[in-house]
Image 1 (cartoon, rainbow, N blue to C red):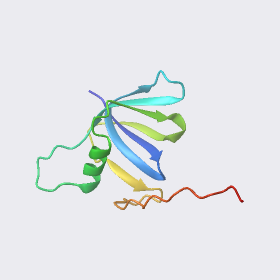
Image 2 (image 1 turned 45 degrees about the vertical axis):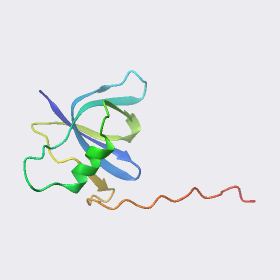
Image 3 (image 1 turned 90 degrees about the horizontal axis):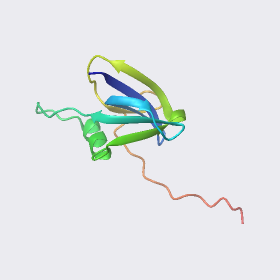
Length: 107
């Protein structure tokens, strides 16, 4: 069975997820990603980034990504580590505090 690594932009970060199925979605302009793969807890060491992604996508059956957000789709031999990267390429485990929208009405 094929395994795909999908890299896409989301909230100013670069996400890398692994999945068994990737296809053009029936919804025009979107890529459908399904059967997301996450690591099994076979060791004592647990990766917090992997756990965060697993929690964020818990219960997701299909992920519809806008084509313009997808950076790359690669077919790989085996599942690697799922990650969230800062756009400069470094791994981030800090989530910025959400800021309220600014009032741009000018009056």
